Amino acid sequence: MQFSYRGFEQHDGIRKFKFAGVVEKEPQHLFCFAVDLKLLTEHRVSLQETPALCVQVLMRAAKDGVPQIDTTLDYRLGPDDMLAFTAPRRALALAHQNRKPTRLNRPKPSPASQVFGSPATAFQP
Image (cartoon, rainbow, N blue to C red):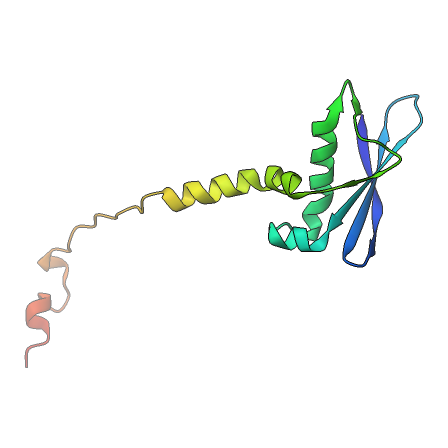
């Protein structure tokens, strides 16, 4: 099954995303997802990422090519869906946080490379 984004509506801080599930020689399945914008803010998910989140939920729910989500009801995205979607970025941030800083070992320049003599004698009056 392939999914086609069909747009969204927004009322009172709830945004509803619509998707059509398309299978060859079968009628379309229409899926609707509702998400609270406060929940997106809490989990630092942008509005532009939300359709990808919905498709991820559809793909996860797909069994035998047809998602096991009721097409007559709005599926409400919850904290568990947000945590599953943001898990890779949280793991990357944790790995970046635990990484040791690289230490650069640069040798000191030789006295012969100093144009005005050695640094110790350069500023003596």
